[in-house]
Structure formats: C-alpha cells, structure tokens
Length: 383
Image (tube, rainbow, N blue to C red; front, top):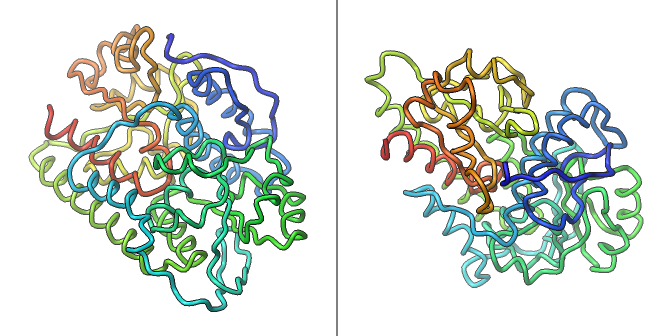
C-alpha cells in the first residue's frame, strides 16, 4: 500500500495525540496508528492506568492521526441535515451572533473530576486537541483561542491562530508565553508536572475525556461554561441529538424489512500495520446502533486488534475504513476489496465497502453527525 507509510517514533509513554512529531509527509502519520496502539500497554506518566487509559489512547490516536493527515487536504463532506448542521456550526464563530454570558464567577468540574473556579468566562484559551478546537468554533467562541495544538486544522480560520507544540513535544513555556487564562487538554495529554507548571503560572487547566457520544455532549457543555457560551453549547448539543435521531429513524425504517439485523465492521487500522477495530464502549459502536445495525465486533471492549480470520469468520455485511488516501497506489477501498481470502465476505461480494473521512468519524466532536450521514447515505440511498 502506497497510501500509508511507516515512520519511526521516540515516544513510548503517551497517547497517540501526545506522540505525534512533525512527519515529512502526511501519509506517515497513518503508519503510526499500529505502532502506538501496541505502545498502549506501557503507557506511563499520565493520570490514568490500566484498561481505561489504554482505551482513551486509542480514541485519541484516531483523533490526531486523522487530524495530522488531513492538514493540507480537504475533508469530504457528509450530506443531508447532519452535514448542514455541522457546516452551520463551523460558521457560528461570528461574535455578533454569539452572546457572551455576563462576567461572573464560574464553577465547574472538568472531565477528570477536578473542581475549577474561574473569575469570569475565559477570553484567552489554548486548546491542544483538534476535537476541542472544533467544539470551540462550533459554539461561536473561536475568537477566544490564542493558541492551538499544531494538529488542529478545522475550520479553516483556525490557521490564523498561532500553533503550539503538543503531544510528546508539549512546550509549556511556549504555552505560557501566549498568556492564556485557560488551557484545555485531554486527560492523556497531560502530566502532573505540566499541570503544576501551568497552574504555578496562574493558568487554569481543564481536562477533557470524550470517549463516547454522551461524553461528547459533556465536553461541549463544559467548554460552553468555560467561555460563557452555555446557551450556544446547548443549541449545538440539541442540533447533534436531532441529527442523530433523524438519521437513526430513517435507518431503522429502511432496515425494517430485513430478515435479520445486518452487521458492520469498522476498520480503524489497516492490514499493513495490523488490523484494529472498534468494539463496545466506543462512539463507533453507537453509530452502528444508530444505523440499525450490529457492530460485528461489539463483543470486544473498546478498541482492539483482530485477525483477518476473525473478519472472514464474522462475515460483515458492511465495511467502513477510515484509512487516508493521498493519490498513490490503491485506494483504501480497492485494497480491502482485493485482499486474499476476503472474497467470500458479504461486504466484498456486494461492494459495500466505504472509506469515511477520518477526521469526521474519529474526532469526538460536532462532525460525528456528518460521518453518520455519509455512512447512512452509502448504505441506504446509494446502494
């Protein structure tokens, strides 16, 4: 496969988001997925441990692998109401349309359970994760961003914001120099030392940990409180819920005549680097249910490595890959369709293999609705 390329990496302790260095070409990022999946067993220096930490690493690996690979490329758009909702959210950063709440003391609990008090809504923020940046813009608070993680690449206007080193190369001095009031970073992208350094400089640290759709809503609500945009956050959450419900209702109606529930297999790491998939306790598993389908690997908890033989045995009706393609060699769909021994799988025989925009489906944020819409249209309207 020429659409992916391996690259070496020094980090062995942090999550994929924290481990990304600047590669010479975007296709190298996808090769890191497997490597860092395997490194999850030795994660250290973070605030979580055991299975929960490993699950979070996988979520964030998807998030940032897609984010870095997408930089400089144009993401594919979903369709229908969900796509329109996400596009409107991206354009919602006009301060004339967003009403800031009056200055008042704000008390909140971040997603690590820490109690945080702000004297007023934050006006200067550094956000390290791409999904959190997308949320900030979607609630009309993009103007509060004074620094972003270097892999935050959506919406387009975010490139006007200075980037800071994040991941294993997080530069605390660089962040402090931007004089933010608040730094938003994931649980897995922070160490006690980093938090202590920021807090000693008078900067509040808000930890995020969105792993499923409900926690995406929590993240949106939390960021809304931080910037005094709770009303806009509620609107965004309701828009997402409406979009999910609309698509789910159509999918259930469309699949009502089926003799049995069809299965869908999500391939989050390609064959060349070892196959990984989404199991239970993941937002992809929830997307499968919304589509009126059963996740072919729902018996796996979180994100797990599987074999070709397991995929062949499960014989999924549909296959969704999030691999990136950069115009060289076989496309991700062509590669899957041509795999030796896979020709008997129903999804292969019926040509039900879809390559979904990696950023949309892997970032726990507003554009998950576009990813769901794209899958729905492919399965129920285009075929």
